Length: 358
Image 1 (cartoon, rainbow, N blue to C red):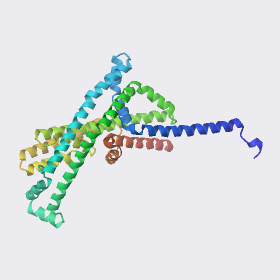
Image 2 (image 1 turned 90 degrees about the horizontal axis):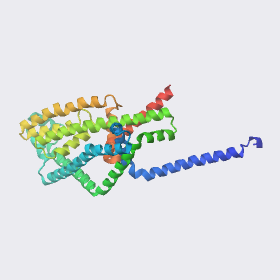
Image 3 (image 1 turned 90 degrees about the vertical axis):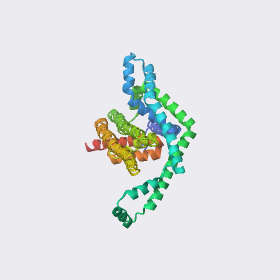
Image 4 (image 1 turned 30 degrees about the vertical axis):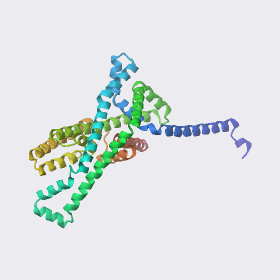
């Protein structure tokens, strides 16, 4: 290589400096992610709540003539009163009723095996013989049902105890989330502009990506928490009217099962109605059946298309898988984080496909 082919010293120095700078940028970014790794959930919830309540923030700003900080404080108060405090009260009731159910199963006050025995007696002899020929032993089912109920209630009780033991950590994360949420509400548009300026994706992609994040976040909250919350509340009210133990607990179970459109809450109220019928409480069983079909079922069929129909829609199977995966990976927050990550995954790949197909 001749001297004429050798890059100038300034060019080589500039290349080294650029390479070192980007290497340093990557290293510091990774280190910063490690530093924040324990706070991803409060950061995530602050961002989601900020997106959802931005219209409230904008309304307060218009009424307060641009006093952004005061508007953010008032929006925080609205969030506390309408969302966070009721959620904590319900969580406390669920933990308490979960422990009561566990104690009832342990003490024998609730006997799933006996309920299955009642079902066996209610079935026609031909059906019982057909089950026997199929290798289904009622006594084995009774034992398995009792053990499954004990394991499930024990798991729930363990969660309640674990929450109680981590009250300090939960309180700290909650306060961090509120603190971050104040700045998201107050400085959200500026943060968005700075992020778009810093990200090397191109302004059009960045705008589309942030828009999709807001759409997916709203659709997930409305499609899971709002629809599920309405179904769970209606189911809990129905259980409370009938005097079924753990009405709040079973209502929250319906909320989580609402990720299965049309059949989610049915997995709770239908067995309860059957058990009431088998125990001789015919009127209560019929009431719960009609209440489940007409009130709880229609809530899903009416609200879901209205709330989610115009937002980003995902296949039902992907919602289910991403929700379960989110719960496994992130804990209770994964109920929302999982579907949002899945929605963003689809959005990014759709953007990529659209650009390369053009």
